[in-house]
Image (cartoon, rainbow, N blue to C red):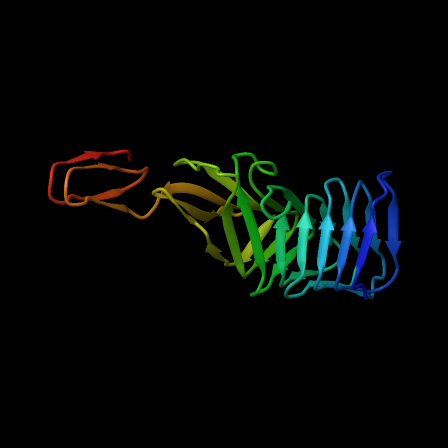
Length: 239
């Protein structure tokens, strides 16, 4: 059981092996270009803490069962290899870090539990640097929620697309939050067989109301409803 911090910080492409079950209640950092292997094929890895896998690093679980429990956080830009294990996530997945776009890879299949949360940050048009992407090489059994946040003041335009999750195949459904991003624009989710893509479309109509007197009412991108009042009102459309 780890309640503190385990850090693999060697940058010389070393391979570290742990021949035991591991209950991570603290922080497990895999940095540099390390490969960390949990080699006990009859063991388990449970996480109620933080697993942070840096870009270029790999955390491998050989056999056994992997369970990221409620409250557990999987984050980073590296690779989690569960190709010979079974990953069930009921915690939080943050590609990159919160507030910074990144790309996290999972080798093998993933089951997302009902309490699973995938946080997706969007701050540009390029996967991994502009917006978060989760890449799963195997099958995805989906449940839980995907929370979308706009970061760094990024402006989303109609027609912009964001391929946020890739997989070999998928079953199940998820709940999305944060898709109405304002300014008359919403993100529309679509499951395309091997990925989840968000597309910027016209959102709910924006109501723009005048006051008593002379007003200039200026629309936003998307659908607008103008409500003029007394006086001489000027309406500028922008949709």
